[in-house]
Length: 142
Image (cartoon, rainbow, N blue to C red; front, top):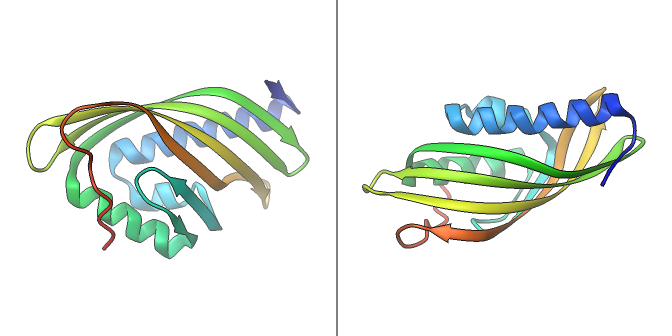
C-alpha cells in the first residue's frame, strides 16, 4: 500500500536508491548517511544498533565480498507525519573474495523517520527469501 504525501514517498524512494547505490559503489559514508544515528539493522546477516555498529557490520561484510550489485524493488510505503513504514525486496549478486558468487533475494520491513527534513532508515529488518550460491556468507564483524 502507498499512502501519505507524494513528495514524502518520492523522497523515501530516493533514499532506497541512494542506499542501493552506496552498496554497489562500496561507499561506506554514503551508506551510513542513509541511517538515523540510532539506526537498527535486524535479521539475517547480523544485527547492529547505531552508527558505529553499522560501520563495523559493513567492514565485516566487505571482508568477505569483493563486489555486490544490490537492486531494490519497493512494495509499500506508508507515511504518517515524520514517520513511515516500507516494505521492499532486493536482489543481491555478490562476488566472493574466496572466488565464486552468490545470489540472494531478500525482503526488508523498514521503519523510517524524517530528521531535519531528510528521510532516513531508523530500523531495517531483513530476511532472506531465496538463497542461490555457495555456503552462506557469515557475519564477520570487525
